[in-house]
Length: 201
Image (cartoon, rainbow, N blue to C red; front, side):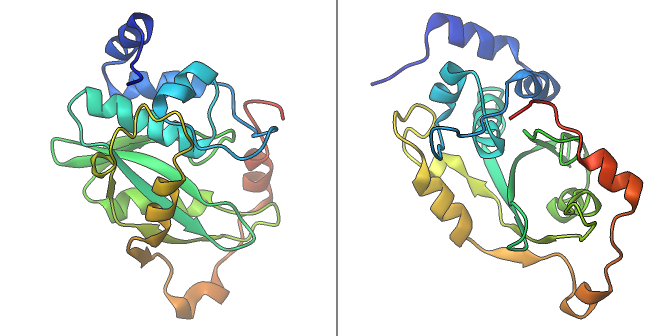
């Protein structure tokens, strides 16, 4: 069975708070999948030294698990014109926060200050828009507990089974259907700020 090396284990032990894990995720170059789509396990994301949002959420959830948290994922589902996002939520003293790997100025870390999952998810709504300002976030998933998947942290194959499960579990609407057409577009300065990227493709 594959295992983490002593060096990798030492790193995981040092990242002993959600904030430290988020700092580490931010420091990983973004995986632009130039060789094709990937969904690496935490072990192989660590070794690749790069991650996209889903891989970052998986790695973050694993590191949270090692701190005693349950390894959860939440799927943020957008309209077909935009990209979905995946976050790793965590709960401290009854309040929810989230780890998030992104290449942009928005959709990032959330402090554990939200009373429930819906509050946490809604904090991403106004940041989720296209270059024309159209707001696109429409649904969020129920919590997916990664402990339901055998050896998910050390698989040497892409974790497409987790992707499929996350897509199929119950999702909840964010915007009342009668109000979708009335949504105000993000303004020019928000759009310009949203174009800033951390790593170049």
